Length: 208
DNA sequence: ACATTAAGTGATT
DNA sequence: AATCACTTAATGT
Image (cartoon, rainbow, N blue to C red; front, side, top):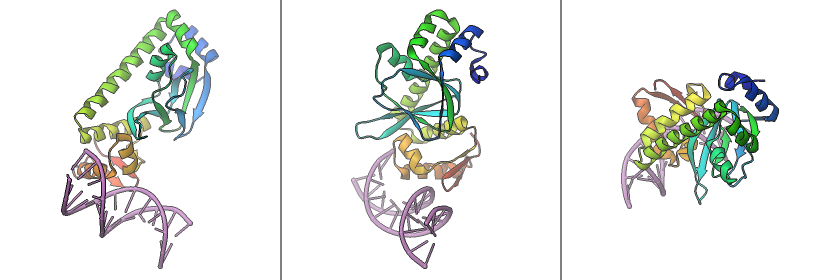
């Protein structure tokens, strides 16, 4: 199974076998919601390919992008919620077509006790998400829109493994929770600086 | 040719 | 940085 390609170097033979036995393969298409706010958490995903974007939402229904997860990652929200048997506080939307393996949370708890490598993996990814989240909060607090936008483009290009980003200014504005006009102006400035090239519904990254 | 959607711009708060 | 109002450009039918 493809699970070995992404996780083979992380986990021992035995654990890989257990993952294969317990995991349910799932494939999603770009734009699909994998999980919404309020959903109960029963499984955790191990991403095999593609990328997922994680969003939060305020009372008015406005979205805010928290971070992307990609192959080799798992959803940090699952980890904190599974302990409390809680509901999801986030929305997960497929950024691109993606494949993953869904693991029941009882299994992940069981493996926590039995496998060192698993425990390490969970702790590491939790730590990574925490760092990522701190970064976003940081730029958010100082309202550095240009920095946020820059990071957004960088992340987006990275998870899609493509220097040409297929999106509209409007969509970026929604993810970053700002207005389209602001995005247009900042992008225009970046284009003048020679960092990007703008086209309709498409942004080409020149240098990061 | 016309309607729709995306992007650019100046002015105001 | 956000909003408004308006223009221009690209695309779809």
